[in-house]
Length: 137
Image (cartoon, rainbow, N blue to C red; front, side, top):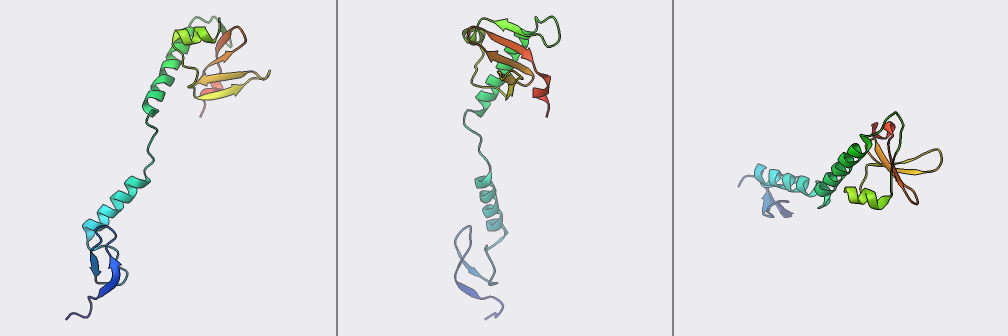
């Protein structure tokens, strides 16, 4: 009988649950079990994105493209484009639920931004303009 290898009562491999023979601090029966255990652990710790994440990102890009097209007709820096209202934005295809940031102007107005392109909704009309600092990292 080899005195270096001992069966540790109650000690089982953390991957396959076989009884361990050997060192008292042994956790796995072999390298395969150790690798399997660590792969499973990393997979369990991995953050799973929301099931709609890809679709939401697609909607944000679509919103951005629509605002770029609306704002293309501006004539000068810091100019706002007026649109009749939220219904017109929605009719253009904007989904106002998804944007990348919010900006509050000096008058307390709230602008919803998709990168630097922003829109705000008033009582009877909506406005679109660029707020360049909203796209800064």
